[in-house]
Length: 169
Image 1 (cartoon, rainbow, N blue to C red):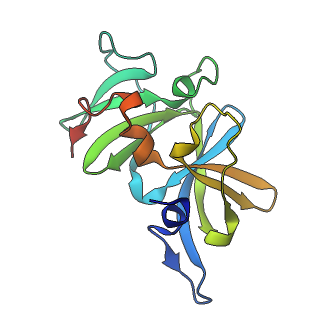
Image 2 (cartoon, helix red, strand yellow):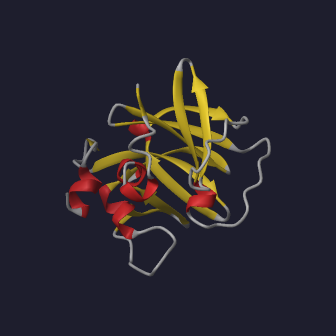
């Protein structure tokens, strides 16, 4: 899928014919990210998880979500953004990706943002912590900029090692 196809997939069209998509905005450190709202199953407060031996450090462990064992990924650890702190704002975003359920720990969630395709710019390849293969682009609204993550590609990538751990919904 090309970047233009990724931008326009799951897009709605307004009266003027402009394609738009909705993204859940969340923070990691000082940066603001966005993921396709259609991938989000629910948002929960952070709670302790059961650690799994020999799991990568960014996989915090697993939790039982109404009978489904869900792997929990700490995105701050995954992106090497320093030591995470868990407080009243820390949340777990439960994702449904290709019929699989996975949770991701983020510092906070702010809002849902609708972006027209004209507001989504290609991400420059500048050697960030996040491989640009997993980016949709950069979403801009006035002075605000969101790093838009192709979350299903990231979570199901071999480097995450979740393929064997992610449970069907």
